[in-house]
Image (cartoon, rainbow, N blue to C red; front, side, top):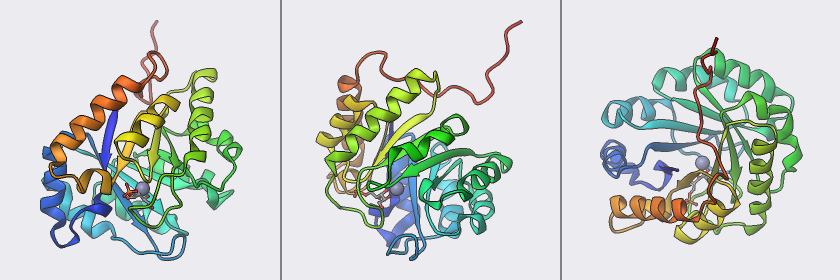
Length: 237
Ligand code: DX5
Ligand code: ZN
């Protein structure tokens, strides 16, 4: 189980120390929400912020979520700034294929995200190409929104495909994730939990991360998910 605090809920006046706090919390990933004021009605931060915090949170995997209409102009800057994986939205339509290819060419892991109103079936052509499926559990753009329960069936579908097709992408949930909704998502098959206000808003980030991990680990059905394996599995001869 991976816990990914979202920097969007951190104190924007102190990005570096907040990133350090996230690393010290024991969370494996730092979720970085990139908003362009066009794909979503808000603007967050860009590659320079990522570059500055990279050295202070060396151990964390930088999980860049691109809520952007033109991610193609940002892939290289984020790759250079220190992203480990980049997630683009399936709502970009037929451009998604090329974007996935470009992210791979930069040597980064790839994710594909789906908004609550979007049909889950649109993800199907990409399942074999990605290391992460991000099911948005709120409409993207702002932190602190309430979890949309109807998205749980999408998490279940993503888990079913993973099992049936014998794939190993992670299933990440993002938006309105707190102790209670994280458990619901874990039961549905999620294994990667983004949480902004739910974690950064807690009195102790470290205890909140530990508690969320404990709860989702206990909630997940045994054998329900598989951990991500290396992209190129060694061939046994
Ligand atoms: C929403 C972002 C989320 C956001 C979640 O547009 O994609 O990652 O940070 O924030 P909370 O956990 O506060 O809903
Ligand atoms: Zn996000």
